[in-house]
Image (cartoon, rainbow, N blue to C red):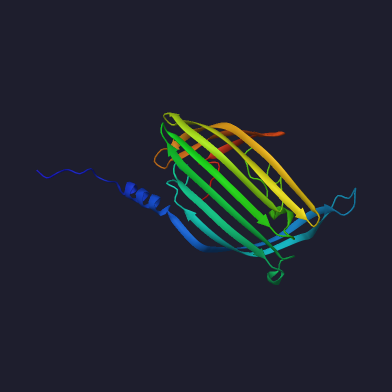
Length: 236
């Protein structure tokens, strides 16, 4: 009697292949940013019509180095994601001014016993003189309003623990801190802030490891609620 082997569905083979493709290393992927920025303003007080004026134009080739070993792109339990980018805007390419911007993002996850996953996110960004305000580095943390803390340099780190304690349900706790620094000739300034919070997740699709839920985060003067699908640091 010939031995019987379990049948492996085509979907399972395809999923296994896709998971293997998550382990990616891309050297010098490139992109290009062309961004004319418009501002609307009232010509004079009391008038009911507006003018459109060109505020700034960014024309910047961008080089990106990316590494990805996550076991799941939605809600990882192990692996590393790293992204390094360098943007250079040039007047010769149609930009309003010359400037550069560098950013490094590093994400990591590690499984622990009792269905606990530890994750960490680190971010550092730097910009040169002449960088438009909307591209200047800022602290990126849950509970901290975006672009509230900006500077020539910004760094932040956030740590998260997720415990899948009952079936598809998980509890989440997280906390982090960030800092910015600005230097202008004889002037320098530093800003620091911390934040933290709690949340929960429900596993929507166990086959794909997709979790969703809500986080409540707090920092000095601010409390925010986030609806999370996948993970709070999602990178495609």
